[in-house]
Length: 371
Picture 1 (tube, rainbow, N blue to C red):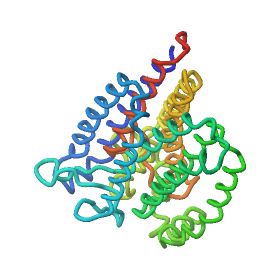
Picture 2 (cartoon, rainbow, N blue to C red; picture 1 turned 45 degrees about the vertical axis):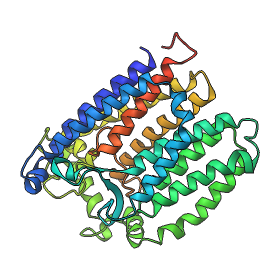
Picture 3 (tube, rainbow, N blue to C red; picture 1 turned 180 degrees about the horizontal axis):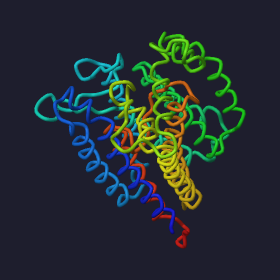
């Protein structure tokens, strides 16, 4: 089976599981606060339709055209990030300004857009385009390394002050991966890496609750009613699920014990309702998706396609790995959704758009006998 077909099958399977689990994990919450068990499911279907439309368009539009417009797309994304910080355009939730209100009236008045999701993909388009066009200067710090680094720092700073530490960390990871693959000098990357490492503790101290997250990561039971509550409830969900799970829709942790159970911690509900086998099946689908993306990356006909495919694959893969690591207690809480499964329209739409671009790159691959 061709890599693009495996990629599409894995994506469709993950979106189906996502819709099913969004309904299962959110129905009671939706009934209590919105008087309809289908509140989040209806929205998820709207996002799915938009996502499929975007994916179809991305399959049929040459990715080189998107890369040629990468600067304009990037500037528009930066504008949206700034707009998200300014009332009345921004919508605050949980003390963070990460969303833009789409329409102020009617059924769609509660719909919002998360500019950071657009920022991730606009940055990938820009980095893949820049590094592929500046191969002659790639070893030069000021002409081949500093300009894309400056853009990454600008976008990361705007996202950091929302605040969103998880996405900030993700942007730097993507920059390192693409820059290294493009052939940037290793010493430039090492200087940046150690500078980031030294500054990380100071950045964490800016927000007191980030310190609490780190402490609860190492000692979750020290504050079981406070900072450690969410991860402890996640542990309980996995314990309840065991090998086979307690049954679809039968979760007890979604009864207002586990915060974010239909968003960032939806994998915990999967573990509880579908058990270890169900959780492993989801992980296997992500492995299929990532390996298919890597195959497409290696067979891309040019460096621009190679870097873009690598960036999209790593974007989806890193988010999946980080999310699963967080809900299982292997990483501190970061607030990154599980691609295709967590409730969240902006993330779903742009992840599906990314899959469409990967298929487009595969269709333009120099290897027509791809298997």
